[in-house]
Image (cartoon, rainbow, N blue to C red; front, side, top):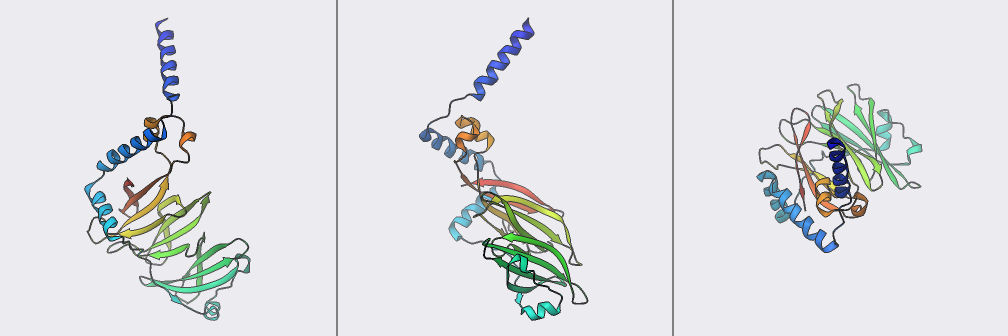
Length: 255
């Protein structure tokens, strides 16, 4: 009997929690503001200092390797066969990375209003070895150098559904091959990413600016269901540090 009563009380308690009424917009604004302050105050000091510096300096570093534009005829001689199914070939670049070089071919499909990029390794014999494809916006494949003692990275962007994109970061080994991904992100399409020396130690950390839905712990405070707050978007900056060829999260700062 006692077990039955206890079970019924537990069910009633859970039901009352799940049906917590949604607060008003004015109240929710105050709660969200207080939640941001509490959340951000618990972050490491270097992250908060960086955000303050960025607000003052308005600067960021893409660390993108500069490439040399070449003519299509030269690319053909190296083995590039333009793929008309991907659209019009807009540009071809040779990009150095350590002791190797990459060839980046970028297409534009007018009907789809989409850019597609193909990345090739320039092999020792001067011929091309296909590596990967990226596509959504212009410049959907980049070669990045994060700083001292860190491997170069191939950053590939692809459509992630809705208003989001997927960004995959591959470490480039000494032979020019791509190792397994060191970071995979699904972020807001209009957001951005860069590399900055957050800890001021000579090695850049990855910083990602994106939009986010209401986090679960905040949702509990403002009540209602997740669907009620689906259009409530928060802006945040995510920080990632490269450790043993893998980016690990340092924290998220909500603006």
